[in-house]
Image 1 (cartoon, rainbow, N blue to C red):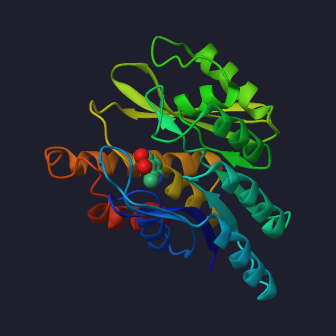
Image 2 (tube, rainbow, N blue to C red; image 1 turned 90 degrees about the horizontal axis):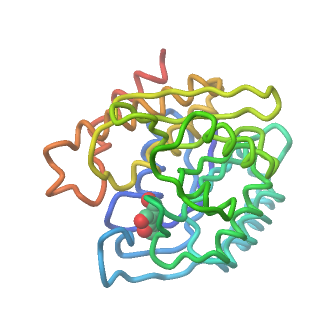
Length: 279
Ligand code: PXL
């Protein structure tokens, strides 16, 4: 049985980060372990008045205990990190648990649609860039890619050459595989493009573009791709499973956006994810 540790916040209400990653990873038949980076009453994407308890300084103690127990992970997957200091501590966590044949996967969660999520700064983005330098796989969206490279966000009207160039420059951070999400060359399709620095190969996988904004779909995608890679699927197949499942979750939420504006109804789609992993 494979084992993943995911490092991100727990937003107690709102369906994102750990409350998405843990059930998805478990459904894929993988042992799911968690390092909570912060406890929030809700996520920050549309709620006001949320509580925030920082757990940065619990992380080294958790790491120390797990090292004593000699616990090993097939993948370490990081998502939303709540503070600048946390990035350095998570970087130490990578040093503690990298074995040479496991995967360090970073979703550099910082923003979307050209804007930072609440509380993030350029200083944070510069530090996140350093964590990406230590990763095997990074999973930025177009906004996060621009923030990592310190350049202007281009949200539409770009072509394949622009995306390939972005991927190559991101991979110069040192990552083996760079997966760029939310890529859309026309209004009917949306998907991801990836670049493998070792083989020099680009690949793309696109599905239908469903208009609207669906919170937490980045966390759904990243959890699934992390699980698929840990299970040993190749990059192409892992991307396909992650895109197809994310689109299923969005379709399942369509028509229920008023009650489920804060996160997609991924739960009822988990049986399909289990099937996708069998094929
Ligand atoms: O889905 C990314 C995410 C994770 N965690 C928290 C967030 C967000 C996005 O808004 O607010 C707390």
